[in-house]
Length: 501
Image (cartoon, rainbow, N blue to C red):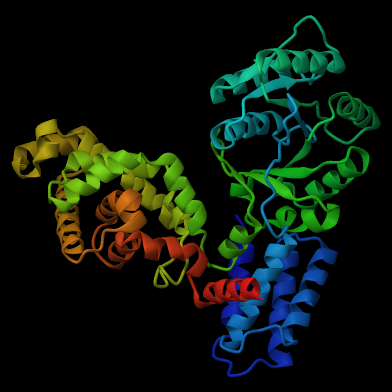
């Protein structure tokens, strides 16, 4: 997401490097490019104009640090303004002691309300220890209530159904009573949508809101519709009073105009973004982290959270122990690949790492897809080996390699290449262990992934760079999200200075 805007902003800001001193001409040239980049990203015209003027006022003023290089002054200002543009801080759902807390999900038909209802319910159960009950009051669309039942089953959450009525108010009353009796602390109401905004829809939503008194009214919109999503959110807010926005299909939106505009236009923040089709592919919206991603600073905090949530720490530690004893086998390698796949595609992970930490290495979506294919091919080769062969690769003679190649749909050359990569990876892990490079977060969770990733990618700069990054102790890795560049170090410095004052 935001690929188009990110590329243009990084290119514009990079052009400021080498300037000994910032002049109004430098600032004007950069701001013209930034304004065009925002407009091409489908950002609201007034929002883009106000953003540029805010950056100009700070860039030409004295609100900069003298120890930063000139181009870094502008990067810092753009980072601050991007964060503020999108809401400043993350806006989590805040619950009360009331039983149940009601969350209304509203939006136009086809925006992804039902799927988002299930995703958010799962996220709340997994991350905020809530006990959600889902109910659909869409009595107009064929099989809408059945669809929510299927989604609820897929995410392991309860759903309330009453096939005896087609009245939305009767349904929500029954659901609220059921939630109170059965101890569900959160009621998620999947409301009806329309292909376009009409008065009947608004009246129905107003009645449901008056009946249930929700703590949150979340408007679901397709991020790829850009300013159309913003305009629809504006109308819903005027009539219903929404408290936040859920943007779906953010993984397919290279522009990001809706996410960048919506807070400034309607005054309500983006709270969640959908980043894939799977039911766990939803993330809280962190404006500061998104700003870091856009400017190439990475998003290591989110990556760490992904690792903590999806990687088996006990298994990773066990594999790391095997590495340190030089007992790491192809069986362990296969297990690592399986864990690594849980984190998502390679291109997604690369975008969460600061560019400076990657030593200038960039991976396009096409290259990332190729790495993912290579990962699956590697897994297939190892799967075609016997347990004995996976635990002792030295028994793989010519006839065994021929069998493995046929079984995995690969060639003998590819089998040999995998074995060479595995042996190189073992040597590298042994050297890292001698140098005391496993520690902190890397030792606890990332060290195990390091070896698998390094072996998968083979020798060379990418191998060494990524493996070193992921395995070289937790401190360097953990600092990446906040100090991936000298700019973000200065951000931390200013925060500390403010606290002392």
